[in-house]
Length: 563
Image (cartoon, rainbow, N blue to C red):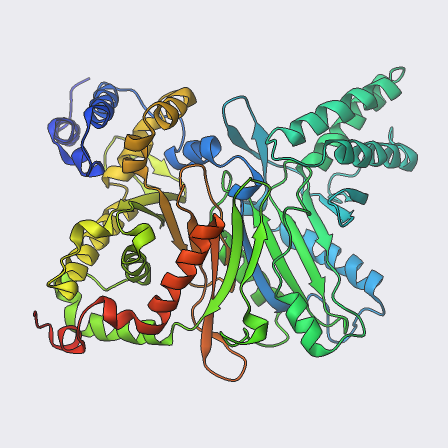
C-alpha cells in the first residue's frame, strides 16, 4: 500500500525520536548500570519503531507489579453526608444501616468507574471488570478477626434457585471461619488462599449436586469481588466533643482489611442523631486513581447532600494532635496531621503575580512543597516522584490514532539540582520552570517518563524485579525514593506507599478547610518510618509557617531582584 504524506511524516517523526537523546533526561546520576538501562530503553524504542506495540497501559502494569499489599491502597474521606431523607429519618441505628446500604448500592450500580475487582497472578495484579455490584457487610472484632459477614446481592442478578438461604449462610460461615484462620501478616496472596480453601470445602459439601456446586462457587466469587462495608460506631450518649474527636480518627485499616478482591473498602460512621454520616473509602490503585475517585465522591456528596461544613481542629489544639499508627509492614507507620497553609497560599499568589513569565507557568502547590521538603536534611538530595492525572484522549501519532483511557503518569525531579545558595529565588524559578515543563509534557503524553512507562509495558514483569533488586541505586535514581501527591478537592487523602519510595510518601488534600475557631487548615498524611515522619513533620511546620525564608528576602519575591 502506498504511503500517504501524513504516514511518511509520522514515520519520520518516530525515527527522529529514536535517534534523539531526550531519554537521557531520565538520568541525572550516571553509572555503568544507568548506561545499560538507557541502551535497553533505546532498544525498546527501536522495537516500537519496527511495529511492536504495548499490550496495556504502562501505569496500570507498573502499579500491578509494585502496589500489591494493603499499604499500597489509598483512602479518601468525606464528612457530613446525608444519606437519609429529612422527611423520613430512620427510627433507629439498624434501620439507618439498612437504608445506607440500599442507597450506596444504588449509587454503586450507577457508576461504572467503580465496577472493578483485583485479580492476583504470580508476578503482578490485574484489574477485572465486574457485572454484579454486590456489597459485603462485615463486622470485625478488635483483633481483626471477623465476627460476622452478610452479602447484599445486586438485585439485578439474584441467587440461583438451586441455592437456599441455608446454603448461602453455610458459605458465609465457611468464609468467616477460613478468613479468621488466615488473618494476620502481610501476605498479598491471602485472598487467593481464602478463595481456594472455601471453594474446595463448598465443592465437597455439594458433591452430589452439579448445579448447586456451580452456583455455590459463583456466589463465593461474588463475595470475594464485592465491595466491603464496615460500620464503625460513634460514642452514643457522649458529648459532641467526644463524637467530633472520634469521627476524625482514621479507620484502622490494619484491623479492618478487605477480605477479598473488591475495589472498595468502605468505612461508615453514622452520627447518633441518625441525620448524617462520614465515609472513608479505601481503594486499590491497580484499577483506579485518586483524582477520578475524588470526583466520584464529590458527585456522591452533591447527590446526597450535606448536613453542613465539616470543620477541622485548629492546628496546635489537643484535637489536632498528630495521629501515628503502625502498619502491617514492619517498620512502616502512617501519620495524619493538620497544618495552616494560609501563608503558603498567599505567598504563591504573590510569586505568580511577579514571576509567572519566568517560570513559564504558575508556581504550583506541589512544586512549592517539593522545594520546601528538599530544603530539609533528610530529603536534600532525594529524587522525588509526583503523580499526574492524564485525561483520556488520542495519540498524535499513528493511523488511525490510538485512543487512551484516563490514567496517571509520573514526574520525577531532583529539586537540589536547582538550588543555589546565593540566589534562592532564582533557583526556585529554575526548578519550577522545569517542573512545569515536565508536568505539561506528561499531561500531553509526550514526556520522557510517560514514554518510559509505555516502553516498559512491552516487557515481562521479571525485568522490573531485576532492575529493582540487581541495580537498586540506579533504579531509584530514575524513579525516585520519595513521593508526593496532591488532591486539591479531597477533604482527607490518606497516603499509599510502594516498595520504591523508601523515603516515604506524603499526601495532601484541600488546604482551605474551615477550622474550629476561624481560619482554614489542611490535612496531611505521611507514610514512612517513625524517624522519617518526625523529620517531615518538622519540615512541614516550616513550610506552613515560614516558607518565605526558603526563597530569600521579601524584596526578591515581590520585585524579582537578585542578591
